[in-house]
Image (cartoon, rainbow, N blue to C red; front, top):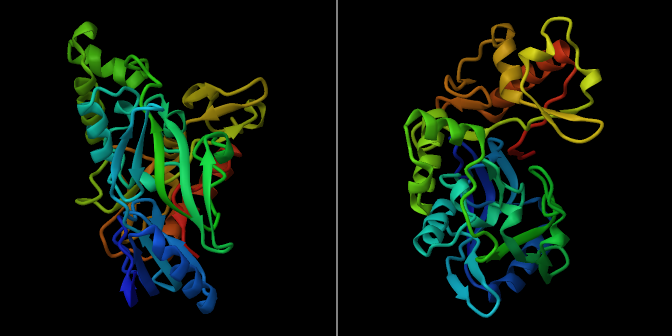
Amino acid sequence: MNILSNHNISNSLKINSKCRFFIEINEVTQFENLYKFVNEQKLPVLVIGEGTNIVPKDYFEGVVIKPTFNKVQYNTNDSTVSVGSSVNWHSFVKEMIKNKIYGFENLSLIPGSVGASPIQNIGAYGQEVSNLIARVDCFDYVKNKFLSLSNSDCNFSYRKSSLKDKPYIIFNIDFITNGFKSLNLEYESIQNYIKDNNINLSSISLNRASEIIVDIRNSILPDPIQVPNVGSFFKNPTINKNEINTSKFNLEDLIIWHHDSDTVKVGAARLIQLVKNDLENFNNVSIYSNHALVLVSNGKATQREILSFANNIKDVINETFNISLDIEPTVIN
């Protein structure tokens, strides 16, 4: 267990951020010492993976913990694969595809680590990681105990789980390897890609499906290595359809999906597109040209500037549509 002081917090927004203590932990046996250190310091704790879904402050007066568990082990007796939390998510997806395991291909190219995937129940193109998880193994650094959580224990919902804001360090996840037997190509953008490229449906293999997802993502989302961003910055809001303010725009101008008998889900990207000319201009942060849900930085923005820009978007959306937007990445206070 390495303990470093005043260490950089790596993040895909390229915010110049440091922390009081930075700890890498790569053995389950080290959790006892970690608990003692955290208990003695009595400082806030932040657990990070690859930093692709956080908006850190300039200086975090606390302890940052980075797990480094990298194993991938197949369990044939119960049709699962155990994966260390620090394994890169897309690398893991490619491993599943190589082994002809269905269900992961629509989640190709999502940035970040395996351990981060259940916290906000990552999802894309008609698939959510909650459909693939059997168990999450973690350590509670406040109560000094290990937990093995079933899928139902995690209380998964849209971009949410009971793991969020808990004092847990995820070090292993067991994924189901026999949950899906065929491709899911029903999502509209996948169908459009197949049509536009004259692809024969019967010719699409598991690997080709993943390549299609990668092509679609690359066409609309910036590579965080090249353009600082955290992917979608806002969640698609759920609201009673009758509460939407239509004084400036009609419902037909929006993208709306049926949610349940009382509510609808509204496409946040379309809301932002419709009001983008009413937004303030900021020096170091802006809306990505190919996808309105993505806020991009030039690498010079602070947390304050990014959140000020995001709050301006939220205020204008609320004033125009009577719709509240929630920020999707984790904001470090």
